[in-house]
Image (cartoon, rainbow, N blue to C red):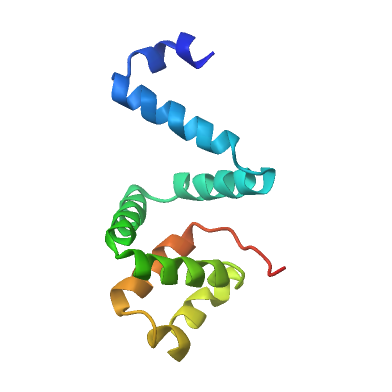
Length: 122
């Protein structure tokens, strides 16, 4: 199906492979994970271009962190996504998070949480 799409065929081979890999990854997600990814993608699409660039920049900065810092950030991200949207910034700026994350890391978390749908604690 995808291989017959004219716009897909016009992509360079490396880009085609990237798209196919992403589709395979999405197919391996649970329904809940797919819905979260869809909601996040829709939130990104509704952002102004400058905000989208900021989110992308934060994602790159996160990826450049050491594996240890990334693991800490991932745990904090999981915890913070269960905080209602209007309270996330307050919690992120609390002494609990200030003691663990530097201002740049809290900024990255803040940016990434802007596009993360609320996930009630289980």
